[in-house]
Image 1 (cartoon, rainbow, N blue to C red):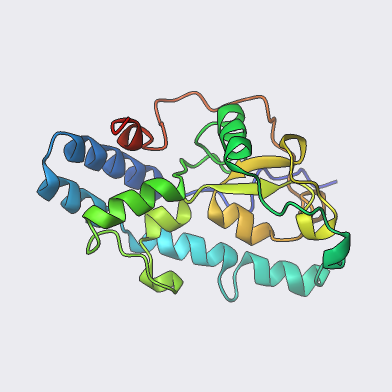
Image 2: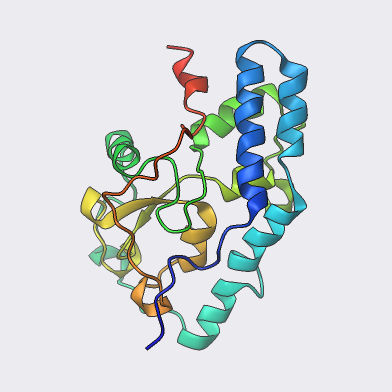
Length: 209
């Protein structure tokens, strides 16, 4: 019997390097060194990270292979699905409090959309965010917080704390409507927050309060 994996694909060192660069960028921003912050944000946009992300959810990546091997999972008609598709702000906060700012599967640091939007206003040239994957900052794309369903919503999963967890975008979109057991991934321990100093760059918004 094959041993279950913890995630679709092991993260690469460049993701953690990018997280450090973004952490330093926020520190620079908070002390008013906007030129340095912009340089660091731009430096964090790495080709290697985009390639890693695309190898999971992109054309010809892991998700494509899963569909070829397993076929498209059968989903519920929309009228039979839970009425709430995504958690409200209270639900999001509860998930982040429980799981922390690291992906529950692969463990990479994650960042909320609100942080990205805030920084994009200050640094639109460094933190690009277009309509296609290639037009988006690779680190912010890979590290984008997802409020992910354990049993997919399209397969009858409820939108509540018991059926949701914090993940990164590649782990979420790479799995889509497959169950973790179907693709050979083990369920994470939802009560074990990764202990580190990564705060999801939340101090950037907390500073405004």
